[in-house]
Length: 373
Image 1 (cartoon, rainbow, N blue to C red):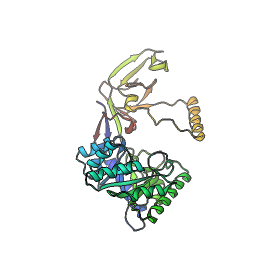
Image 2: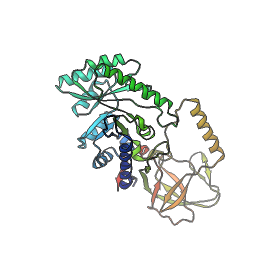
Image 3: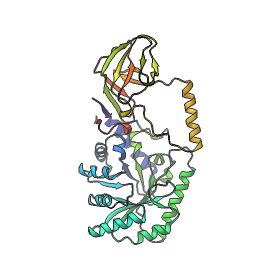
Image 4: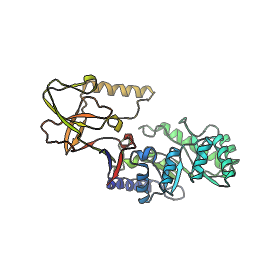
């Protein structure tokens, strides 16, 4: 059976390392320690939405964030009573109502959703908790930073909304150069200053995602949003000493011996050089194996970087491997949707043996069981 194994000891190590880093670098102007908002979106970055949240609660974390209404409701249905922030704003009345009914902290990022949320709160005779989202140059959710007067006018008219926080999101925090991240940070602070000058409550301030949390301690403010850092999977070498969490396991489903010059997989991409014993492994693209984030970077520098990598791969054979009973086995041919073929020649391997594969848990289908041990 397929499953993703999560080492509780390694995950606990990451939580403690993140807490330690926050404590070392994260006191605000009043000497108060940072609030860690655990982002558990995308099925807990592949570690299981409910499972990861419960694990983090056991480690003393009590503030969570999600990206969809469905994630928020699933946590409530699972009995999670801690604070949950919906990171994406929405002007869809039914969604706002569902969030309010389930005591989710909503995000307000436009005049439209602010008005609807205020009306719903009034009709339900509730004081709804909310965070304000500022778009400092991401082009997604939030009030545009260039029009603070619109934000002020919108917020000062809210009678049934309690502002508990204000935040923005960085677009390049994972890059080595921090120029644009600093520009976004400065834009955010200017908006906060304008709000305070107009007696608008801003609540806790948070701008850092996992990358910014580690790379730019001076931007920590009152709180940080930590998600991928818990998994230890960051797009740069971290200085916290995190461990990669999540390992995909399946079993050998079939073994056969192929003759010399026998084609393997799609496009006849591989041909055996000699008689070869192979194992068929039920794991493929559908399980997240050999998957990566979409190559949709549009900047010239990104295209050139990608081209450079492709040219290197053209002249250098990049083999993929899996581990069976502690033995390294090469993947032959292309990865299929559901299966791969691996070379087990001269290795004592049998049907049913455990196979371990390097897979980012976030890309593994949510239907695959997550096992904490």
